[in-house]
Length: 148
Image (cartoon, rainbow, N blue to C red):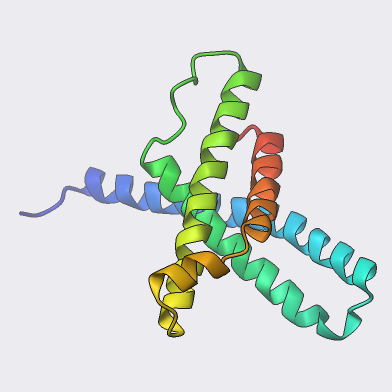
């Protein structure tokens, strides 16, 4: 079955729009994550690892962007879109916060399992305070944007 020219151009436009969204959301999150990395370096006087911190901030921004875009494609957080903008934005920020928190938890669990821990050791060694801290940044940044 062949695609018509209209279907091909629609897919191309959708790909362009999604790529533009990927870049914009990643840059938005990277700005905040890099600012937090700078703040941590200044606070802890750890200037020798600055490039690693920024690299991890950019990778984390890319990963969280992809999680948010998957949530957007799955229509997560659309329950209150007809409500006032503030309520809709806060609801979406909360839903994406939960989604990113769950993703980070599963990621840390898999990482520990790969390194040889069993399931109970892996789940006990996860630092929930660190996961909550990262996901709170996502909540704050996504509630500020009102785009999500």
